[in-house]
Image (tube, rainbow, N blue to C red; front, side):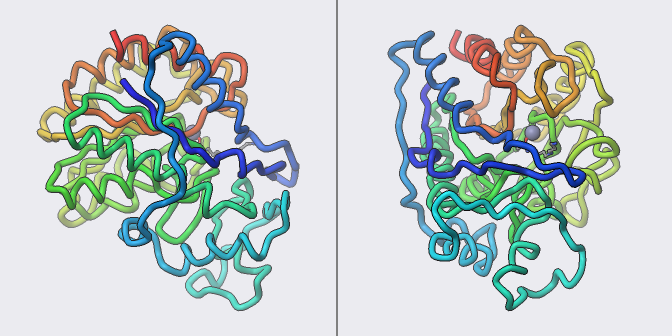
Length: 338
Ligand code: Q9C
Ligand code: ZN
């Protein structure tokens, strides 16, 4: 297995986020990917790591994102100061169908929550994160069996015209669309603790991409509003979206059982490439999540995914425990590399 990383991710370091009027330190620390990279290299010293810059075709991004949103991301570099965060304290759900003229109101239009901060170099950083996914994905399209895009920021909550849940560009979805253009039949399997709502939204009316997610019940956790089990797709997409929502303290047994259900559907779909939105915020000590998986659970999850036997692109999403996150990663990839 091989890894791509986003060269520029240290340029994005939001300081704070807000939740219920409380301002906390941001959970999206750059160290988490650094630590994982270090741990994987210690375990497998000859691992090939490719660092990716921000050179990516705008047309590739525009397959998923709106042009006005991409312009907004780009203009942060001139509008924001070095080190400035633009976190919201509140999000008004009004007048959301048209870009406002006032600069200070635009963030309400281009961001849907109070945790996702725009920073000065966010365009560069998000493009470099996507480029790592794109570069890894292109190897997988050539039938390399596993590449891991160890990137930051994540992507699975990003919407065509909005940042959300620490995400700016819909990394996995942009690449999935690219794969469809290359005549592939992809599956997105999202095993982050939170629902993969970007991919569900983007591919909801389509049958040429299967989207599956196991996540915390949105009745309890982000992204809250929707993303329940009865959301199975619309029009051509009926039957091509599958959600499994779990209660708090869901343990290994419940989790593996849910994974079996999704993987059965993946197999029936006869995909030729698997895109896994991967992360370790399902870990029992994660500070913002409430599942009960242990370090050893990740080997078992990896084993099941590997048994599907498809060329697989692993895309990093969330994960906030700074003590054990690399142990979870090593446990997962030990099984993949075995
Ligand atoms: N007090 C990803 O895992 N909820 N995004 C924060 C903290 C936001 C998660 C509440 C969760 C966003 C990629
Ligand atoms: Zn998450």
